[in-house]
Structure formats: structure tokens, C-alpha cells
Image 1 (cartoon, rainbow over the protein chains, first blue to last red):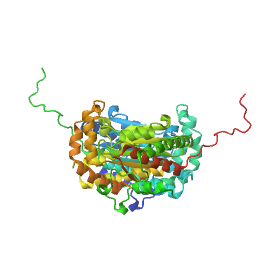
Image 2: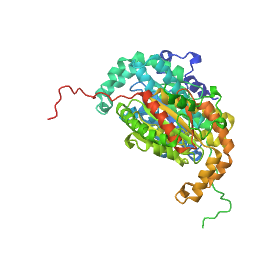
Image 3: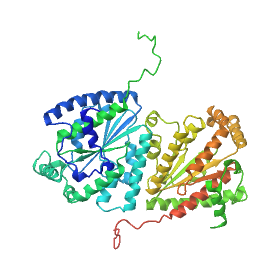
Image 4: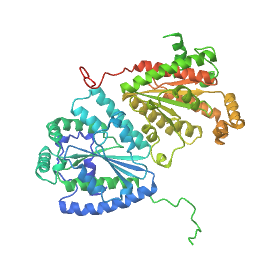
Length: 273
Length: 273
């Protein structure tokens, strides 16, 4: 384990370590000192991700599912663009889950999620996910504790099933402070280029900040499993958010260790005339 | 419980009753005496199913999933045609699961199944199902006991999730004798109208008859749950197979008790000019 791995490991949410969101600094940068170094390293890491993604695709044995959740303005769009944007789009599928359609609402909440699970060889990136279906109704007091418990089990069983059938799962909570969200929402209101990102609902959700933090705490405690861990990424610094996420994805791809397969046919002695 | 209900209830596979497939007669007709009565009653039952299906669709609160499994020639196509054929096709979706496509094989085996789960208000009929993914590889000794155990749990968890989210599930094993299969396969070989149904692989699978019966026994024992029961339908007599299946589906729809909802808008005082 190199010196960075300790830092990455410290980001993995572990209820045994009694991790509490309100004790985890949102502006920390464990594992690296400054923005210049972070941006410089990110370029190298992403180049390695590109190579690993190529091998993952060629081998077609394992799928990698990456889940992003965050409070509004947490930086989900940004991290997807910075870390996965440079990869070959043929091997990466990004799904931004929006408000469910009538057809989606007519099915169980995992139905639309399962459809978008990446095939073996692919990297699937979820911008929001099935976690919305437990976080939002609980924060809004629309489901009972029993229903919360059922969904937690359904989600854990679903993820276990995926893992047992060839999918690796990494889950990232982009952790920003309430003050940082204020700055970013104000930016959306004042910067004409960012106006389009502002929705009036954002302010109502911000009003539930504490309730959401408590809900995330519960969900992280109950759904961060050994095989499908949650990482809490300090995300006030965008460069750190990208750097840490890319490092953790690279580490997982190295663990999967995809290899270019041999030819599918016997090519000994074949001549291309 | 009327006199028929005892008969229907006796068809529900219950490992506590130590049900053994090789002790369940394939040519029995519990609950009804003869073919004429059976066919006559079927027409009435199917008319009732039609009405119940209409209410299920209008209410759009519950989905009904019906799974059919059987040895080759067991009558899956026949029962689908006779019991569900007369219903409004807008409310019934039949899925015949074939050999998986490359895209399907690149995902976990429940991926293609989840896609075809009926929406609330719909009846989904599976001609073969996710059970093929545990039955066939076990019968062919392609998976370990550990993997069998994992799949059994995955399937039970998947079905629990569906049930907890508004889907009712009935599973039917159409139970024929080895001698009856011989007659039906010979019919496929000799009757030009049925030739197209014969596949050479059928004979190889027939060679594994005992192994398949043992596998079905294991699967029925481990996956017939209180909420997603398996029914073993004596299916040597086609009229009985249809009658019993229709009765059980009707009973489940009556249990769901779908009601035509009120108008979605306030229609008091509205005039159509």
C-alpha cells in the first residue's frame, strides 16, 4: 500500500469506525497537498484509466458500476465530465436518473436501474441512482421506518446479486458543506451561464439540509458493504473531488486486473494474403 | 373455501407436506371429474378472468406475474393459448424466453427477466423464466452446489423485492409423465403439422429426465415461498391443466380484488356539450 492508499482507504465509509458525516471535513484533501499537483496527477491517472478501460472492454468479464450521489450542487456533473469524459465513450455509459416516467413509476423502483446496469466489459456511471428512492422519501417523511428497512434490504440484495454475477460496484458521496452549497447556488442565480442549472425546488431541498445529512448517514451506515463500499469524498475543492475519485476508480480497475484476451480463434499459421 | 379450493390448495407445492414429484400423479384431475365438465367450466372461468383483468388494468395498482416451467412438451404453449389467449392483449404480455442473446449473456441472468416484469395493472406471462438459469445448469452439472445455493437466494430475493413493490407471483410446473412425453415427442416426429416443434436437442434433454426431475424437486422445495408459491399441475390431461391453471389465476385475481377507480378528476357537474 503506497502512501496514497492510506488516504484513499480513509475515505471509505466504515460504520465500524463510527464515521459521522458531520465530523468529516468537506474541504480536506487527504493524500495530496495542492491544486497544481492534483490537476497534474489527474491527467496521468485518467490516461491510465483509459488503458485499463480498454482492457476491461476487451476482456469483457467484469462490469464496473460507479454511483454518484450528493446534495444539490455537490459536483456530480463535474466529476463525471472530468474523470470519465476523457475515456472512450464506446466503453462508458452514463445514466442520469431524472424524475421517473409514468412507465417507470408503474414498475418497482429497481426496474429502470437494472435496465441500465452495465454489461460485462463496460463502465456504467450513475448520476443519481436507486439511492434516490430511499433518500428522498425518507428525508421527506413519505415512507415508514419499516419501508425504509425493506428498501435498504432490497438494495443490498440487489447489489449482492450484481456482484455475484460479475459487476464491481463503487459508490461515491460527494460531501460539500452547507456554506459551499450556498456559494454554488448563488453562482447559479447570478452567473447567466449557470442560470439554467437553477431550479426553484433547490431551495426547498436546501431547507431540508440537516434531515438529508441524517438520511445520508443512515444510508451510508446500512448500505456500505465490504463488496459495494461507499466513499465519502470531500468535495468543496473540485480538483480534490476529481483526483480522489479517479484514484479510487483506478485502484478498483487494477484490482480487477483485466487482461487482453488471446484471439478467439486459432490464429497459428494464418496468413493475411 | 368451496369444494374446489381444497383441490387447488392440494396443488400448491409445500415442502412441509414433504411433497415429492415422483409421488404426484401426472394424470390425476383433483377437483373435477371429466373433460366435458372441465372444458365447459373453463369457458366461464376465462370470462371471469377477462372481467378481473379489466379491473386490474383500470386500477393499475398490482401487477400479476405468471411463470410456466415444464419438461419439453409439458404444455406451456398450450396453457398460455387456452387460458390467456382470450384475454385483452393490451393487458397481457407474454414473454417466451429463448436462448439468451450476446447482449443478454453480457449481463446478470436476471437482467433480461427484470425488463419483462409486468407494470402495475398488467398480467405478465413467462413461458420459461429465470428458473431456466438454475434448472438447466444444475441438471447439466455446469454449476457447483455453492453456485446453486447463491442463485436460489438471488431468485428468492428478487421475487421478494417484486412482491414488496406491488407484483403478485404465481408459478406453475406442468407435470407430465415420461411416457406422456414419449407420446408427445413421437407426435411431433410423425405429425407434419407438429414437425416444426421438434428439435434434436429434445432427445438429449429427455435422456436427463431423472436428473431434471430431481432438480425440479430441489427448486420447488427451495423456491416455493408463502408469497410466491409453486403449483404442480398434473398435465397429462390438457383439459385439466388448463382448468386448474385458470382456477388458480382466478383465485389470485379475486384475492387482489381490483376495483374500478373513481375518475381521476372531479367530474361533479361537468357537462359534455
